[in-house]
Amino acid sequence: MKNLKFPSAQTILFIIAGLVTLLTWFVPAGKYDTLSYNAATDKFTRLSLDEEISLAATQASLDDLNIKIPVEKFTNGDIYKPINIPGTYNKLDAKPQSFFDFVKSPVKGIIEAADIIFLVLIIGGLIGVLNASGAFDAAITKLAVVLKGRESLLIVLVTTLVALGGTTFGFAEETIAFFPILIPVFLAAKYDALVGVACIFLGSAIGSMCSTINPFSTIIASDAAGINWTTGLYGRIFMLFVCLSITIIYIMRYAKRVKNDPSKSLIYAQREQIAQLFTLKDTTHINFNWRLKLALFVFTCSFILMIIGVSMLDWWFVEMTTVFLISAIIIGIIIQISETDFIDTFVKGAGDLLGVALIIGIARGVTVLMTDGLISDTLLYYASDVTTGMNKGVFTSAMTMIYSGLSFFIPSSSGMAVLTMPIMAPLADTVGIGREIVVNTYQYGLGLFYLINPTGLILASLAVAKINFSKWLKFIMPLFIVLLIVTLIVLAVSSYL
Picture (spheres, rainbow, N blue to C red):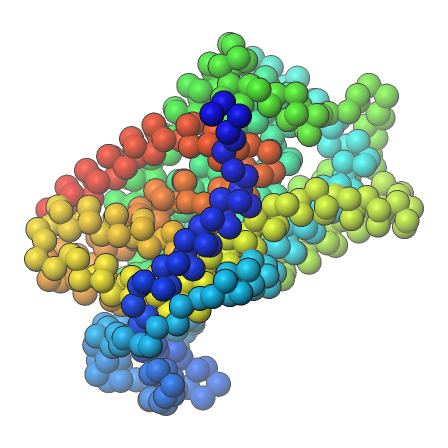
């Protein structure tokens, strides 16, 4: 038994994909009719099984379909994905996925996730070019000296800043770029790599879970629920403060134990492997001249530009990836690296994150199996039926658990919102609570399970630092339980206010 090892991230995802494949043989197939807005024709398109119907883009059309959403939410682009139409679920002929479908799912997932995969690879290339100059190692060494005796500030600042990105514009996939950059900083501060992963990943997770103005969750979910996104805003701000405070305190307690006694680290056995992975070069011989400083400036500006573009300029993966590619070329010119060396270094840097990119693609393949097997809407249909006749407190708890379960199959926050909210939001009316409570259960349910969801980003994040999922579960479960209890209490109380 001692020789048994917890499976790798890739193996875990393949096991999950296999189980989902089996589910398609037992869960009845079914689908809701969907409604989308075509800006080119200024018409709604209702897709009903194999029939496509064009409808006038008016409020009357939405009222006829029992969709309680202002028509402006569609015409101004707030709701840009097809939404499920309430009361239109139909059972379909079963479409069980075969073994061949199972083995094809990772390839399909990689193709569907090509945008984020290329982002990860280009970022890897950019980091490789910067590392070749020695500028990054020199800067980290200087930062470690500056923070000496005040290393705990690093935990507070990183976790808080990443959480602010999560709560405002859904800072999630983009955080992959920060792991290879910031983990060496935490190691230099005498913490372990798990502290670095926790600050970045949990900052993003808590920020997204308690989204305030995030257009990819709060706003799109509120729109799909037929309410203004500002409804319930103060409650979400309160939750952000509470959950972020709890998380920072939890990380700091673990970090202090590791700093005082490195053997207390949950990944102590991997200390040499991780140290080699993130080893800082000897910087005593490096002349930290204007070229290296300018290279670091360009590197920093690329992330600032990414954040501005995503939050204010409607950028997404193509634009973000382009920024990092151009930054790599500019840095190569600044540090005067030859064309051949630049290409070799860039490719090697991208290769270092290839394993992370593949994990993202394989995880997306699980969703592909669900969609192709026509069981996603069936799970949603039966989940919505469970809450009938519940009292307010039990309803909020049940909805949170339902959303946590659904997020295993639909990890996308925006995808979950447009698919489920038109179905789930009206349930709030039946138990006498505001629809913003359902929006909150959606956010908190997704956010809580996101901490341990293997079809989300956690496996890809851990892969950067070569940390096993079992170590993460041992680290996160006490915090997960505390946050779950706090969330259920807050939701239950708010349902009676």
